[in-house]
Length: 381
Ligand SMILES: *Cc1c(COP(=O)(O)O)cnc(C)c1O
Image 1 (cartoon, rainbow, N blue to C red):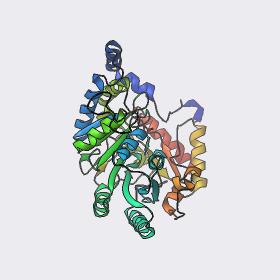
Image 2: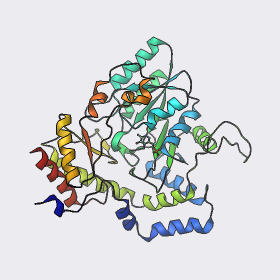
Image 3: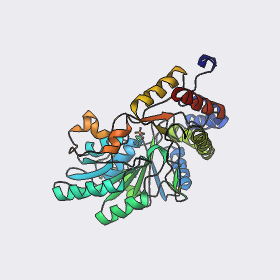
Image 4: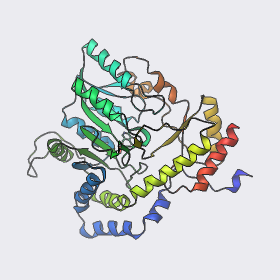
């Protein structure tokens, strides 16, 4: 059959989701327009309570983006010049950008070849190297829950406890995911997530949140997101930032939270269709044991770049959305070349040429998922 007889399959379909959300979305937005408390209106506190309950965390502080969540968490620990912050080399730039902006040094760690999560053996050797060099103080480890799956938090926390490191969960892609039957949000000292529109729980603009079990940290996060304010409005206790979540975005997220669990279930069902129809021709995602993915990304691996390009071109020709997360490891990006010590990180360096992400949004139908698989099979067959 001719590919042109099929309508395009978008990578993400926020308009279809909007239709599914129904009148609740408009009611939420209208309520904000009516009370006109656009900054820290009542929806912000309501959302914080709902998000904390959703993931089982004690404290939730919403902020202006996932990047700002990372920044506020690190500012609260006083991380800066002379500090080493260990983080995976295969992640989005924000994870490494923030420590660098604060004057700290990102130390890139290799990732697991199957789950793409931070590799504990590589972390151990990077910590040992930093201690031997004696220039930087090992201060923190940022575990990224990549593509919707959790990092190895029990393993990371054991190493961090021994080395006295602050643990920060970059959960930007994985809010709604779980490890050991516990939703992500309390696996580390602090958890940062993002509500960028394409994340599993996305707003209609930028947004983010921090989760912690520590009342002291939560209070600091609240202060830091409003210019370091004290208990009264114009008391300035510390240098902070303008890092609040808009009331309008909180209202939208409240409407979306009502359907979020069902959306994760739908993403899981699509992942299973892809698994069943592609596992014999490409490497389908390895599941982190005892976990539930939030399925931000369904990424397949090809044996080499030529085959990946062949598959990518076939998807392109069939108007099927696709993406490459990430074409290069961070330490290979021009912006980070100057802060990397030259250590080879072979797995992270190899993935960019072989990886390809397929559409996995909750409005994708079974038939569309099967068609994506059929186009790939035809291209590789
Ligand atoms: C999206 C993302 C961020 C940044 O979130 P923003 O809300 O876009 O600032 C940070 N880390 C990772 C791993 C991400 O995917």
